Image (cartoon, rainbow, N blue to C red; front, side, top):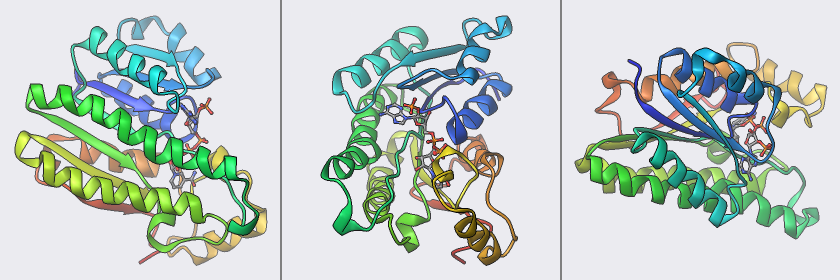
Length: 244
Ligand code: NAP
């Protein structure tokens, strides 16, 4: 494919970084953001073959002004956004009665409110172009739940609801909206889980292991490929069969 203008939120590490790499490998132009740069970001910035194709903006998506500026800078650079991957997310673990109120707000503000806001800005331009692909990274926690992740699970279930309604709203305008719901992946987000918990998840997973970012990247690439133009409003579970 190649040549598409892609915005991936939260591409500094983990799944987001793997998604950014896959679009760069495919010859697309990529903008990503995070609150702090990373070694990965510095590597892409230093790569002369990516000059003009890779852009990084240090931005906190929860800050409405910062996220608005991020989207507008992306429009200025590329003229529009063909593919939006809403990947940035935050998980705070704890049984609900003990969760800090600020943590509840932080999870909802990023996973739900910032995603809706960023999508709103991008969709306006996609509507003017008459085409676009949106992929929301949700989670199987939004489908089947997980003890200690109720707030996170609520935001991810909400994202799938957002996907379905937006798919109905935008399908006739050449824009598809889908969710990818990963199982448990080996990223910094799951570093907080104890080894015994991770072992248990792997044992309960029919394919017998945790997920890797590469497993999810393949789903994102498929949903943004021409062959997936009739897939709209779908939640694609990528969990090795854990919730089957
Ligand atoms: P991660 O390693 O913690 O990476 C999260 C990314 O989002 C980082 O680039 C982070 O950079 C960025 N980010 C966080 N807060 C931000 C903010 N306020 N503004 C801008 N960027 C922000 O997480 P991950 O495991 O790759 O997860 C990626 C997505 O997959 C998330 O939506 C997550 O919910 C979902 N998911 C993960 C798993 C899993 O097991 N790991 C399973 C299912 C779904 P900064 O911190 O520097 O801002």
